Length: 194
Image 1 (cartoon, rainbow, N blue to C red):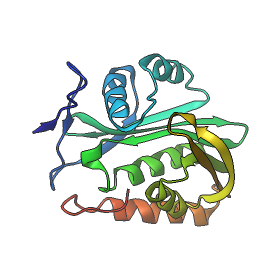
Image 2: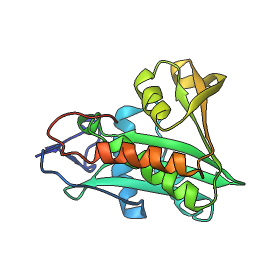
Image 3: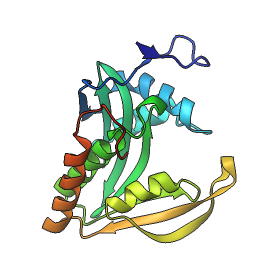
């Protein structure tokens, strides 16, 4: 059974969560972009365009994008820009029916692991001030508030909270994120973080 986005005729569908579903995190490819944009249009007031995603994927030296797949369908995605020892998480999205099932945790673990492999010493991101659920997840990954970008989310007239995670090359950080991943890998029967 799949979830359809009624406002997106002819767009990809998202499989419904099942307890036995297996989630796989893989590099985002051009073939995934339609499904990513369909999810994005359903969860964000000003979604990224197909062209923007394709532009990001065309820069593999400084970009890292991943999708979460379940039953062959895209259920979530994450992207980052990694430059000069810093990783900036540029986007994160999970289809509504897959939220609170560990998908975002798995995606964050994968992008943090990739940033570490590419030599990043710190990670940063922006999040809406009202999105306390996401802030809680980011705190679990070692992100701490560092400032506010006024009206960063202009489409909803909301400030963005800037968060940073430092010392991501440390063994302590690796252990921290691996423990979060282990919790997220529990069966999907019940809701979990992210």
